[in-house]
Amino acid sequence: MKFNRRQAAALAGSLALPALAQAGWPSRPVRLVVPFTPGGTTDLLARAMAPELQQRLGQAVVVDNKPGAGGNIGSAEVAKATDGHTLLMGTVGTHAINAALYPRLPYDPVKDFAPVTLVASVPNVLVLNPANAARYGIRSVADLVRVARANPGKLNMASSGNGTSIHLAGELFKAMTGSYMLHFPYRGSGPALMDLMAGNMDLMFDNLPSALPHIKAGKLLALAVTSAQRSPAVPELPTIAEAGGAPLKGFEASSWFGLLAPAGQPHDQVARLQREAAAALATPALRERLAGQGAVAGGGSSAEFAALIAAETAKWARVVKVSGAKVD
Image 1 (cartoon, one colour):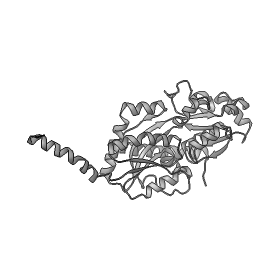
Image 2 (cartoon, one colour; image 1 turned 90 degrees about the vertical axis):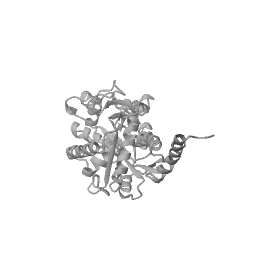
Image 3 (cartoon, helix red, strand yellow; image 1 turned 90 degrees about the horizontal axis):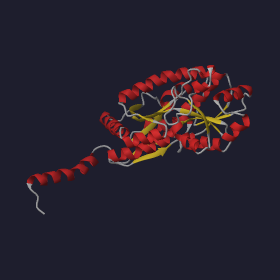
Image 4 (spheres, one colour; image 1 turned 45 degrees about the horizontal axis):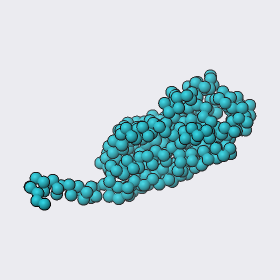
């Protein structure tokens, strides 16, 4: 087969593209660290993003779960990474709450990271073990307040770990209602949900995406969402502020998740990551997938994500102070 000069030039250019891509960044698989166990919302979002980023970056994106200490272990590992191919799926806990909750962190949420983009924001949802709820006669938020006040320390409250928004939502609920429930932190939503559904725990404020399948299957009793407005994913559920009456007026405790790189990552690489992640989050398929899980897709600029982190850090510092929550 013969080619004219223009066709030959086009063919040569197309053959050169893979070589040029390999010579640039990323030059090998990218590790996306999830600082919590598999099965929770952080993990679900990372696994939804990984194939999209892989397609756009031209390298495998491998999700690596590194749970422990409310997300601090995995976050600290990424903060210290110098290989240029390690990213973090950070959360409101790791980058806005933990600084106020822990006396010492093994990383600096601001200085040690380069924000890439917000991936998604989600409400939390108050869920109970159905059998345990029936035993206590709990069918509403008002019932829960009544039972918790009348039986201090009797109800067990699970969380995905100290310092997570799930934990703080429960602490804020306790502070605003003047109730006391025993807090049991787990290494992620996955194991906490398993114990809750098994009846070993009574209740939990979980991220909606990880709890929603179990709510739909009837394995969990959902009472309300923690956002300021009802969630389109479960419009039948009231907000805590709606359902809780005067003691819970103004209650709001939502979660967010975003991509972050180590602070030393070159600016052009961070900029490319932001472009590719934002493009993925703008696709109807991914936006619909996240909406079906109860999440609202992000995709804003790195500067917008940095501003969100700063605002949320100030907000949650106040919540920690009001709730009296502490972690040794």
